[in-house]
Length: 451
Ligand SMILES: Cc1cc2nc3c(=O)[nH]c(=O)nc-3n(C[C@H](O)[C@H](O)[C@H](O)COP(=O)(O)OP(=O)(O)OC[C@H]3O[C@@H](n4cnc5c(N)ncnc54)[C@H](O)[C@@H]3O)c2cc1C
Image (tube, rainbow, N blue to C red):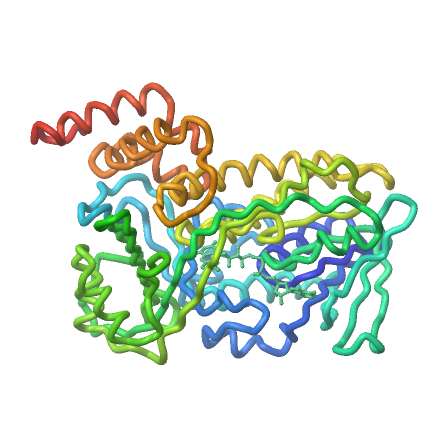
């Protein structure tokens, strides 16, 4: 193909652009923020306007890190050399469930850095390719004709200032607020159905510096605590570039964190995991607390539309934007890039709709959705239909989760699922269930955990 246009120059768009360099003579990335100019800002860890969630702590799961390495070999070494922390699941990644520390398992590298830093490094690599060109402007719609996409309408502010970029292939990577549905409807094509689960999650993130020695032995930590009335609180912290820590506290509905440092530090102190108390007692806050509200998890079911134009696909949050507590977004974007690569390697015909692509992406979304939405539906305030068999699945899921704290084999399965290296169904295999039942009995009788 001659020209591919990727709309949205964040993580999903950049990875898609990198994949497209193998198939297109020229890849144009259309981005409304001047991402060429904000490189220094990003290096300082500052978020940009088009990615407001960039102020919040982001974990890069192992599934995503491997995906990025596939397209950008040497990425991990490069960011580690620039200051990102790289922990190890078997050594310094501490996770807690209701104050009980999970057994350390595996030998997986765990990258920790701020979101702007990660994106800046991906961007530098992708835009360094002379086949990739950045076009600063805002996409206003698609050009579709003869059953296929033919270009993108782009403005630089006013409608009078509109350009059309011709394209043989278009990727929508505009994030969770994507207007792909209305862009399709403008041309008489069906809109993909949008499903939402109203989680009403609140995040508060801070950057901190601690004196030497305070949190030695930990690179990343997460603590999930269940409270009265179905309340769930989350605290997460990671060592990041610039010899700092990034830490977040999260809660739902009426229990969302406030934008003030007293609330932030009080939540850290109240957390049953010691590390968060130490961070509150010894950490120096670097700047203000940044808050973010995530009203719903959502997915667009492209596999359900009866007709779709050839040469057009969606990636990243534009396909599915999940509860961020599970940290799946950037890794999903990397897996969507792999689906795109498979689709393009199969050399689809010029008028062939990308049904195979959306079928593959559905598998990625289903797995991520199952991991996060089953937990979301346990929250009493979430007003969404519970699927058939929910109570049973929930009880089994809870048993396996609790067993993962003490049983090394269950913990390993849990690690692989949480890091998107295995599907959530792998936690339901007979061997894992048997070990989980045994772990539950041992906990009830006070016996030593199985090794
Ligand atoms: C609070 C929070 C915490 C999160 N934590 C994690 C985490 O720990 N780990 C993780 O992996 N993921 C996390 N995520 C998800 C993660 O931020 C996204 O999945 C990731 O940024 C990839 O998204 P994306 O590239 O699809 O979209 P986005 O990052 O949202 O980017 C969309 C891009 O499109 C551009 N754009 C939009 N409209 C237009 C237009 N019309 N024309 C041109 N450009 C346009 C925007 O400027 C932006 O650059 C979190 C999300 C939230 C909300």
